[in-house]
Structures are given as C-alpha cells and as structure tokens.
Image (cartoon, rainbow, N blue to C red; front, side, top):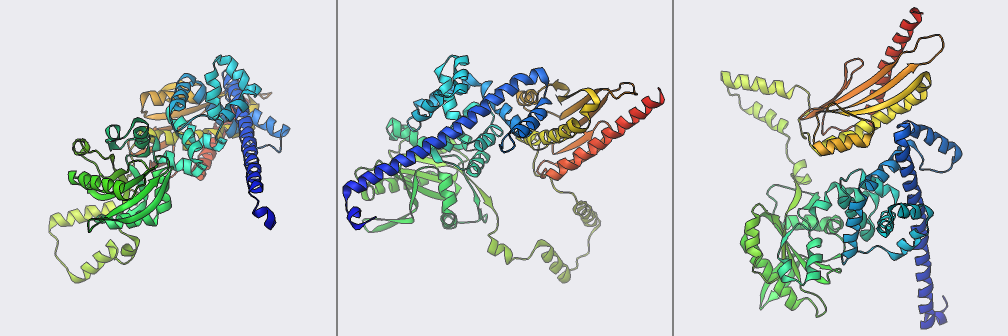
Length: 562
C-alpha cells in the first residue's frame, strides 16, 4: 500500500468492506459445501434405512464396493461410513418431534439463533425440499439447518456418544458457538459437559435481572473438571491457584466462552487494608468481572461472607460505569447443599458455588525424590529382623500369593456406559470384520446369509433394535451375534447349513467372549482394559477358523453320503 493510500480514510474503509465481503463469501461457500455433503449423507442414510428391512444388512457391503468402483476418487462411501449415515438418519428421524421441540427452545434463547443464511441456502436443496414436504412442517427446515451446520466428523462424535436429542443438540450448538475442533468436542463430551453446565448452586435469580441471571446460570458448571491438574492430598489454595495459572489455556477452555484472564492475587486496598483475590476474570458475554475464590476443603458459611465483600469492593473500585455487577464464584467441595443455600440466600451480591474434580497425587518433583515402597521394605529388612508369630506368617504368605498372581486389579464395574463402550468398541467392529470376510469368501457358496443380534435371549434383526432394548432395560448379562449360512449350493453335494455364533458375557467386573461353535473362551478382560484392533483381528481369525473346520467337516460328510 502506498503512503498516500495508507492515510486515505475512504480507501481504508473501502478496503475493509472488500475484506468483509471476501470473508462472508468464503463463509457462505464453506457452509454451502458442508450442507450439500450432509444433505447427501441424510438422503443415503434414509435410503439405507428403508432398504434394510427388505434386503437385510449385507447389501451395504455391495453398495460400498459399487460406489468405490463408480467414484474411485471420492472418499466417504466406505462400509463403515455408510453404516454411520444410516445410524445418523435413524438417530434423529426416529426422534424428529423431540428434536424439533429442542430446536424451538434454542430459538427462544437469547444467546443462540439458527443462522437465517443457513436456512435460506438449505431451502434451495432438492433433497431437503423433499424431507420438508414429507413432514409438511417448516420446523424440519430449521432442524436440518442446525444439523447441517457442523462437519460430518463432529456428528459421528456426537451421535455415537450421546443418548438423547436434547444432549446431542446441546453439543451441536456449543460447537457452533465456540467453533470447537473435533478433539475439543470429544473432550467436552467425555467430561459430561451437558450434565455439568448450569448446575452450580447460586442466588442469581434474586440478585440479577432475568436475562443476565439466565446467562450467568449457564456460565457456571458443577462440578468443574480440572483433571489436567495433579496435586498432593494436602495441597494448599496457593498451590491450587498456581497450578491453574500454569495451565491457563486448559482452565479457560473449561470455563467456557467469553472469559478473559485479568490476574491472580489481584490486590484490593480498602482503607489501608490489603486483600487479594485468587483469580479475577472478565466475561465479555455478561459484560462483568467474575471472581473465582479457590478452597481445597469443604464449603464453610464464612466463605460466602468474604466473597460477598470482594464482589462489593470490585463493584466500587474496579468496574466501570458501563460494566454490569460483578459475579463471585466459590470453587470448593460441596457435600452439604442445604448449608450453601442458607449461606447465600440473603446475600445481595450474585454468588455461585461449584464443586470440582481434580487428580490427587504427589507432585512429580517430590515423587521422583522419594524411594519406592519396595526400596523402603528392602531397607527395613536390612535393619530389623522381627520373628513372625504363626498368624503373621500365614497372613504374609497369603499376601505373597495375592501379589504374585500376576492379575491386574479391578478398576471399573459394569455400568450402562461400560456396556455401550463394549458394543461400540468390540461388538460392532468384530461383527464388521466377520461380515466382510464371510461376505467375500463364504456367501457365494450359500443360498442365503444373515445376522441376528441377541441380548439376554431376545433376538433382533437390526443392531439399532439391540441398542434400544439394552437402553430400555438399562442392563444386560450378555450380547450375542449369530451368522446364519443356509443352503450350501455347490454341485455334487447335498445342501447343508452352518452357523457362527459368538457371545460376550458381561459379568460384574469383567467380560468374556465365547464362540459357541467350539465352546471356546477367546478373550477374558476387565472392563478398564483397552480393546485393541489386534484383539478384534485375532478374534475374527479364530472364529472363522472354527467355522471353516465345521464347514469342511459337513462337506466331507455329505460327500461320503452321496
């Protein structure tokens, strides 16, 4: 830019307009591309769901191969992604009315509205026009506009890990508002943000005007997730504070959108007396200062009084006229919620109280400088030799047997979340691996092949039916899959049928995989132990080997009986 233009205010304004138009065009183009892709996936998902009843589940393998041949340079038509499209469509279409109600609630909120640009662009899409016409309701258009506003990878992370439309739409809107990457989205889902957001104890309804009280309520979480910290059991508030400052980026991410860090140990001088705020932030969405006071122990009523004084002082000495009233937040353990409610009930300043989760461990420097338990035992044995009485001797022998068994301790019991993890991480992938091999190698030899999904003795033709049954019961003792190969059809041999069945037995603290062909236990793991791709590959190979042994045995038998 020349010096003349650098000082030309008209040019600078004109240049700014051009830049804004370019950015707006880029945004519209990006939105349009994503909408087109997701509307296609929605169409394919619906088509797959409709044809599954007629053709079963196997045709997806053929579709994936045919699409790959026709569109070799286009990604996204793998067998697994096609199944995701079907699950995605069924997840929302089966709950369409609830989803639309959830969108209406979002539309009424002050901090979120569906982009009119997104709605206008989507209304021109022929696939979407068909969906809207089928439902005969413009609510469908708004719902799909919201749904099609985030990338496909984000959708997979959401609908595979959430259980209700309200929860999934919560994460969709948060992704749009905060521009979350897929990794950050996964972190927020794993930290259960949906059930933590807006759950802090507070007096906002009586200390703030209605719009601000709702925003402030949603600003706070309970509990806060500080798993990125590692502190000793006897850590003091200052150590807690320093640890948060050292991880300020992760701390701000956990606090949420709109927070700006002002300082720690922020000094307030009141008539010659100095007071120091643990952490001071400014929230741009609320246009106010937010004080965080950190306590490593349980809540005490005097904490609320002290924080009230801090809030009033910041209002008087720090905030400007155009700022709204300061909010105070106590981070401490909250075992007695009634005591907290009584403590903040008649305080005029807006105060919230939240719990937090944190890792408790020795600091790494201290840990490195300390001897291990084994080293301490060895040193003590050198110094002291105390004769054991018979009871001690037998107890020590028992401890030795326990420590030498080589088995890992139980860290996780069976829960509905664990059952869903086993289904997603082991059951589905194992079925996919077996289906691929059977479809390729064995299906041409039989008149008909199909899969049945079982849970606690109840069979389902669809995987989704199995998951709905488990969700309805909220537990199960086993899940099973049965591959039926009916009518061997090679000339010269009489027809015969075969089955491959495997069962995952879900006990209180572990699960076991058994193949019912050979009655062989294939794998035995505790719930917290990792399920690897190697595990699945080895299991599939073992099961196919058993099935082939059975088929060969049947073939030889029928050949002899000719």
